[in-house]
Structure formats: C-alpha cells, structure tokens
Image 1: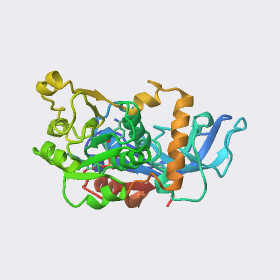
Image 2: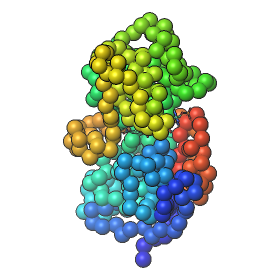
Image 3: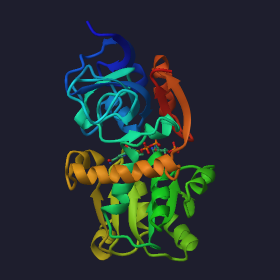
Image 4: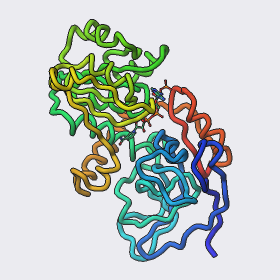
Length: 333
Ligand SMILES: NC(=O)c1ccc[n+]([C@@H]2O[C@H](COP(=O)([O-])OP(=O)(O)OC[C@H]3O[C@@H](n4cnc5c(N)ncnc54)[C@H](OP(=O)(O)O)[C@@H]3O)[C@@H](O)[C@H]2O)c1
C-alpha cells in the first residue's frame, strides 16, 4: 500500500465551495518513467471554478482532483528517469489535478524547471495565464512596437500578464475594468490607460488615447462588454474572445462586422497545449521565454491570499469574490 496523503476531490458538480472536500488519497506507485512530486503551490483559476460547477469546455470523469496548474519539488524518480532528479522544483504538467499534497506524473511531461529560491506562488501560475497572454498578443494580429491593444478584465491575472508582456514587446495597452479603485494594479503592471467599462467607453477611450488606431481587442467578459470594446477599435480590427466571465453571449453589431470589417475569434490555451498551431518544441520555447520573465520578476500577478488544503472551502469561496489578486493553495503548508 502507498503513502496516504491529503487531496481535494469533487464527486459532483455544483456550487464550487459545496462540492469540494478534503479526502485521504493513496499516492500512486512510482513507475520506472515516473516522478513523485510534493505540491508546493497551486492556483485557483476561473476555469477551475467553472469545472467545479460543470461549465468548462472539458470536464473530467468524477470523482476527480481539481486544479490544473502548480509547482512542486520532486521527491522520488523512477529507475529510467534522466531528465530530472530529486530536489528539482518543477512546473506540474497541465491538468494533473494539483489541489493535492503529492502527485505522480510521467517524467517526460516535465518540461519546465525553476530555481529552488524565489516565490513559489508566482512560479505556480506559469502554466495557464502567462502563455494565454502570449497567445493573445502573438498569434491573433501582427502587432508592431507602438501599436495599441485593448483588453477587459484587465485586473485579472491574464490581464496583468498581458500588460507586462505588451510592455516588453513595446505595445501600448488600454485596460478596461468593471469597477473603480483598480488604477494601482493597472499602473503597477505597466498599463498605459485604465477605464471602467460602460456604454460610453468608445468616446472615453478615443479621448484618452488621442484617437489611437487600436488593432486588437482582448475580451474575457463577453456580453455587452464585447460591443463596448468594438466601439473602441479601428476598422478591420480583431476581437479575441478568451473568456465568458459575464456568462452572456458576445454582442457584436452587424454594422461593425459588415461595414467596419471587425471580426471575432476565440483563443483557447487547451487547444494550443494539445498541439493546435504548436509543437512540443515551440511550446518549450514559449515557456522558456515566460519562465525567464517570471524569475526576473518582469511578469507577475498579484496574490491576495494563500490557504492550506484543509481550508479549501474558504479558499474557493474567496476566489469567487471580487479581489485584488489570486487565491493560492499551499497543499503542504
Ligand atoms: N481561453 C483561454 O485559454 C484562457 C486561459 C486562461 C484564462 N482564461 C480566462 O481568462 C479570464 C481571466 O482569468 P484569470 O485567471 O486571469 O482571472 P482572475 O485573476 O481570477 O480574475 C478574475 C477576473 O474576472 C473579473 N470578473 C469576474 N466576474 C466578472 C463579470 N461578471 N464581469 C466582468 N468581469 C468579471 C474580475 O473582476 P473583479 O476584480 O472586478 O471581480 C477579475 O478581473 C477567465 O475568464 C478565464 O477563464 C481563458
């Protein structure tokens, strides 16, 4: 019998704090090609909450361990493993189910290592949101230094990474939020313009940017927010929708589609991770670039709170509230 460790599990979908529970779970045997990882830190992202409520694009078979990203230290390696060793701090491969104390994964899925010093909460967030920001800025529209982009939910982690990466690439950002009091986060991440969403957004952004030609809209909210973003865009611009935070369909006027040639497309990290428009080598190059920025502190997302695994219901309820940063689980304290 393997070691018994604590893990979060959900056996049904529903209101996220109601469906998560901490259980004892036997650690899987470490095969010749596997590694055993002590999970140091794991994020709670909107996609994890959507999975708990049953609304995400891919749903696991239940019961399942939630969480799709995290960082951990290798404590044991199988006899055939040569790419990593005990003591290495690594990105846990995507969709492992990270809200647990220990995980066993195939060593050949470990592609990102980190130094043993540095803030584990920042490193724990590398898997999903930094490459999403990269995909949004690098794969939708051909942008040149000096070009403008606009995004909503700009105080989100993806929003912060997008501002930081845009700065690195010499782009200018208009950053739309849904409430007052977030100017410090936008300024801290290097955003150029901050505005609260609303029906008159187009006029306000024209004034704030000197009628800049904005070629890319980055939409995590959908609903009316998509149209309000369209009102800020130049003719022929593209809106990349990557989130459904409002729970509403994207609104976009035919006038914009027909007469101004605006287009709307989706961006989904999961497809990129599965090989759509990417190879293992191209993904490794992107993660290597982002890893460097995270180690240097040039890419970071605010963290509002950390919780032990035992307090998972409080942690999940906290993540559902308006906040000024991420909620991170520290499964081993
Ligand atoms: N397509 C992809 O591949 C992909 C990859 C990663 C993330 N995402 C999506 O990106 C979005 C941001 O993720 P994250 O991890 O960066 O988020 P996060 O840091 O947890 O922040 C959540 C953000 O959502 C905003 N928000 C929540 N409910 C909203 C609503 N009804 N209307 C408008 N804004 C709302 C929050 O605003 P307040 O602060 O005002 O509450 C906050 O800015 C999520 O939709 C996530 O699913 C998509």
